[in-house]
Image 1: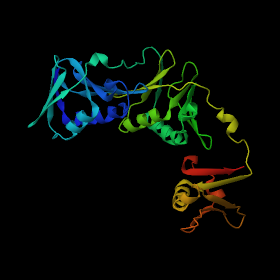
Image 2: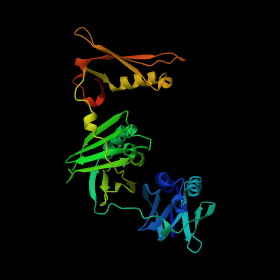
Image 3: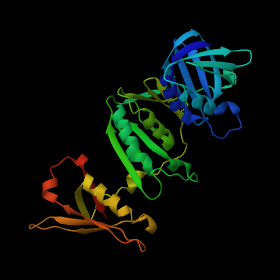
Image 4: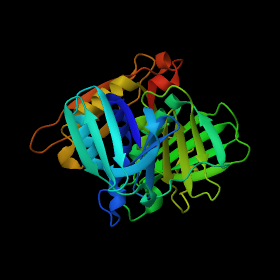
Length: 336
């Protein structure tokens, strides 16, 4: 293997795949990053057997080849290099990669690439295309509600349902539930229901910040893995087996009190009150006073700390004025 690439491109690619490197494993190769020069590009890949990330960067390839190198050492060395071209030359006999950048040289010993696990591909599995901005928003609005306790593995994931031209994400941890709907640009041929680990979805959101083209979601034929295909990046995750709770039965169908407030005002009031809510299990209290024809109603958000004090935020409920506004700019609180 003999190639050269820009230091900034290599550093960016390593930062993308490093999140999938195994921190504790009995297999030393899982602590390494795969470098493979093929088809005029440099392929970087890492996996912990549950999550795999592959990234391709531009490179001038003189000889194809592959090797795996320790992730921490490679990352630290590349990030300490000046923003110039890095030349790499592999000595196959002793599995050592020589790196040269400006006046810096290094020889890093690695492990044969043949020992690196094979990363699954989408193959002929089912494919769904979704806008990158929509997927990022859905991930942000659901993954926070997923459980972190591994005692119930199903709840550590996000239920993804694809049916006709609609996609639904749902997450719950036993105390809270978040459901997000969105439209698909192209309808799916048959319904698909899978449970994706929340951590995997968070990685998709992290690396897709600059993505403008739609993201392709593919489920492997054996229904055990899901592949997210971005521009020059692929993320493969194991799916969670099990039955996700029927969240439709949890959602209330009626309410006794309905309050409409401006989202930004709601967020600011909760943020201010939560400073004093840390001692009381992060609990804030809502007090709703209905309005009448003479004036708007009022929503009070308060928290009490026995040691530090008690702030409160008051939001004025303008029911008639806000009723015609877009729902995306308001928060709706229902108390049943």
